[in-house]
Length: 164
Image 1: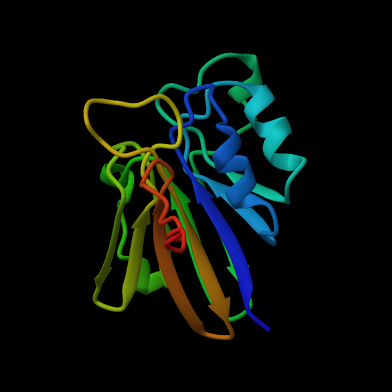
Image 2: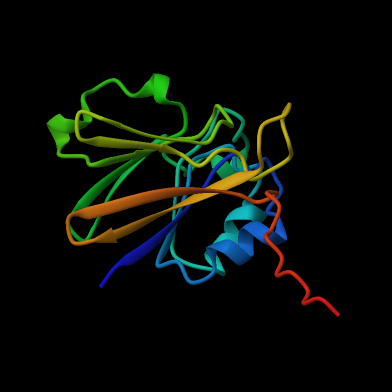
């Protein structure tokens, strides 16, 4: 049975209603850092179990216990979370990591390199420049993994009204 993992990053203190709605039904949520406050973590924990990494803007008492990186296994897939990919100082293949989840750039992307899937869900918080408001998901079934990015502000197709 497939497992759905929600991916969110760079909320910077804003958990949009649309983002929370998208994450409902996930088995787990991974937050890629720049959370913006404990209240965001509390809201996400109300939706699903949470794995979170600290971003460069996550300061203060509430953020001290948050690690810079996290590794977790879901079914037969090992995931690694880090806020800024520049801090990735090893080859993920050496640790049998199949997916690296990051944030920081606010640019959503999915890229496979040498058998490792790199996913940045983009920023789900306040808009930065002309970048989309986005988040993502992983679908894991055994050793198979698929990723997708969702633009929260993309136009929704509407059903055409029948002619009168």
